[in-house]
Image 1 (cartoon, rainbow, N blue to C red):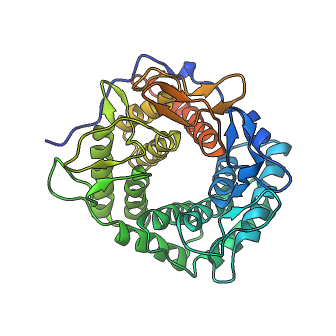
Image 2: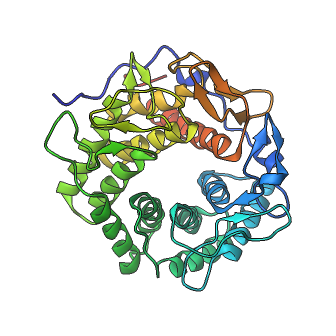
Length: 360
């Protein structure tokens, strides 16, 4: 039997969720970009920069409704990094050393998809006109290529969805969204394993989110329903005793044992993103519960009861192990935290307009 969405929120309330803080994002940023790793809260310069994280940084700033001057300057810096990383064929390099040397050639792996996601979001919602224009130019250049990897296509499609919602409609952007939905595939009929892949690996909610976006924006109600069914099933798989328990780094095989560790903050953030889109597209308040689970995962409503948010630094711990958090605070984890807390503001606003129900 397909598991249904849980209607009751965890004991934590929305008023317990802090405002997104940018302290640690600034700590990891310099005049080049965003440093990837940290030891505790100290940036590890020897590991350099990657397009993956700079793209996430641009995306999260673009989601801010009223970014201040410091965040706008950071968005400009991140955008410059991404345009420098892009090749003539639309692909992107991914890794740069602290000494500003690229370590690879432009390609179409996950980093291309994340760059397209960040650029598409900045083109739709960037803090000023020139950022939106330049991001749109780089996004259109990236439309030349396609990836053989479903998740790379999914990330790029999320950027396409942002641009299509902002308008005007662009056939090439819509084509990318449709191509990604085709690569992802449809859910199966077996209620015990509805996923279109033989295992759950990483960024799983993004796949369902793309089908929801494609169904909504391309006018395909059946595809929208397929995406919602996939996400409902995944939320059931990831729920344990009333809290979120994300698919860990090692993944989850269809017929394999369920391992719970190590869990990554980026997985909780992906769950929040997908549930927020499902709520916005359908207007169904039942999506508030799994969205709230993703938010409170960072505040200790998880498998070990560990708070993943460092209130001293504004950063997020890199992973949840069986013995508690990995105390390093890298860029990916911290941006996942900020992104998810951004959803808490929207959820609070939505809940305040309802006569009853939903987290408070």
